[in-house]
Figure 1 (cartoon, rainbow, N blue to C red):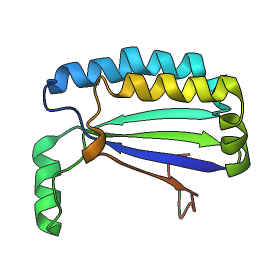
Figure 2 (figure 1 turned 90 degrees about the vertical axis):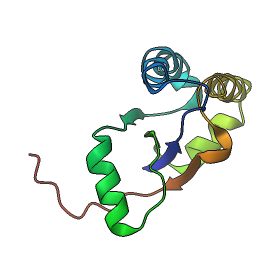
Figure 3 (figure 1 turned 120 degrees about the vertical axis):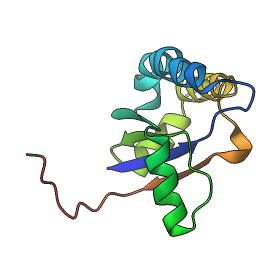
Figure 4 (figure 1 turned 45 degrees about the horizontal axis):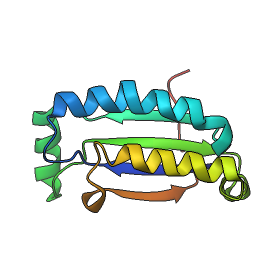
Length: 125
């Protein structure tokens, strides 16, 4: 599988509380409605938490300001991702998502990339 990892920062004019609420409730519902048109297989939001611990970890490594959260979206392959964008429904879904993201995400200060997972261990099961 291929995964899009989207490291997001909230717009400065939106409170953290409203950012997380909107992202989870409004945007999450929109992504769910559009998932089939996008050929997306899985969608996860990871919201930033424990700001004091995060700040300490970041400082100990000399890192910059942390992101507010991470979105992960999975497809079966890059070909599936591209194929979805080649359909009118996929293009419309992508347009709607980007338009909605503008309501709460600071695009200039956010980052994304396509990744491929390489599991090293999993002690959860």
